[in-house]
Image (cartoon, rainbow, N blue to C red):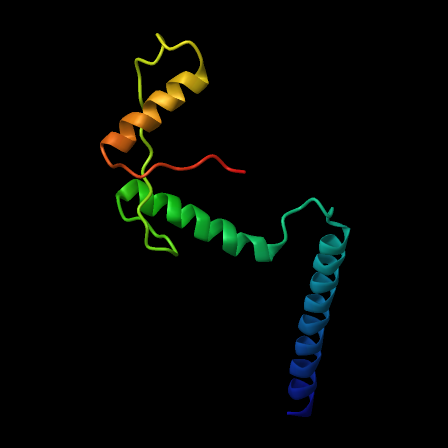
Length: 106
């Protein structure tokens, strides 16, 4: 009985030793990783962002403010002289329709 117990303890010690070696290798690989690699904590933000994009595509917007944001595609603006002229026309048109517009970032 003593020999089998000692054998079991030796097997457990070997298994633990093997795991220690594997963990040490993994830690070394992680330490050698370049700083440009995305840290694991950033994955939560990326997953949340992707989930928001999926929800928007499904028609279920997830927004902290509770506002719904839609994108409008407008064609037929080629006759206008410049981007500024077409932008002004579009803003004026949306204002007459009482549609909220996104202001230029400052």
